[in-house]
Length: 268
Ligand code: URA
Image 1: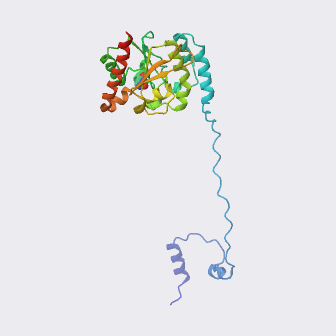
Image 2: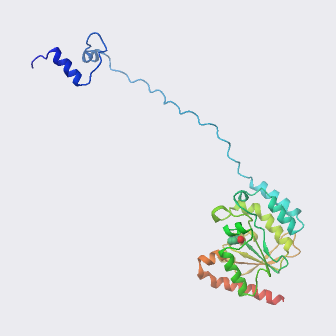
């Protein structure tokens, strides 16, 4: 191989991008690395920590269900009239559902009626209007009542839970437990002849039962509570919203309505 001239070497350096001389004299780095002991890898220093995030506000403590239920029980027991109960519910802050709801949905219909219906919880329309069962399932309920000669003047309607659960989800057991003393007092103050429990949530809460609505519906149960002079005959049936989704269940719901009508006729 022909020796290359210093000029040719410099030109080659320039073409390769070398634009700076760092030492006075050339350094043979190959020779250097041959004599140097193999480098021991430096211990890895811990990765620098990202800066600590600013302290977050502590998340709101979940409301203590037992404590809230004890408060609702005390407040409900103190109510002597439906107006007092409505005022107590409207002022009650122990149920988180109230924060996302627009209104407290108390009741509709005739408090002197023989029949008291209890649903699950308000939906979007009920939350808008402040009245139970005014949306699609309310319209079906009105038709069901009409089929046995009843209307909102001859029944009284409320729900187990008085505030709309976000997105119309089912109320949680904790929400039901917190609201239950109010609806129990509601029944005591109305003191109806008959209770009609619409759907599994109302039936299991009011009858303290774990039976499914399919098993519990269609027969009479004795509902009692300390403030009632006597047990009230309670009939569970399918929720109108379920009937809208499952028209095949309307046959059984119709039978339940006839069961109610039979008792009403026997009374009159
Ligand atoms: N479903 C219920 O359970 N209650 C209402 O008021 C409306 C829909």
